[in-house]
Image (cartoon, rainbow, N blue to C red; front, side, top):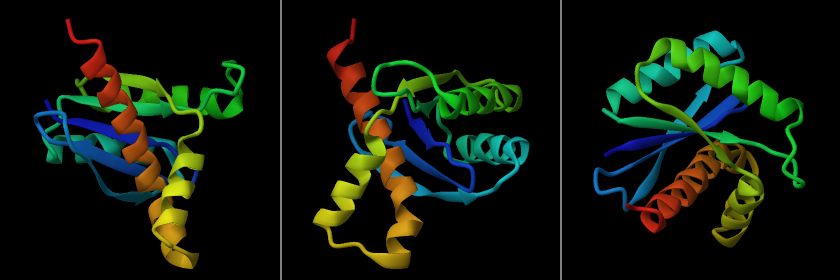
Length: 140
């Protein structure tokens, strides 16, 4: 099944999708949208376009596992997104994914404006890779 991951942001939201074998996660772009409802509509449209069977949204928990304002905002986004799609929409602990994305970009020497443009899609890809790894390890 194809799965789409979403790294929600106030300005830019990164998207990634995996292949049907759930092996390869690839970034598919960034949506620049400040209005949460319009963003939810656009993400639902992208999910339909890419023919995914599930959407996973990163949940930015605090390092101690508690929910802060950012996590609450993501939960509100998931609530809206669920109104625009019949697909299952799950949340996935994304602690440290942005740090991992920046580390990947450091290793590949991506700097400046280009870095700002791709960090969200890289973060979505990291979220999706972690989710796929969890699914592989917990198959029944």
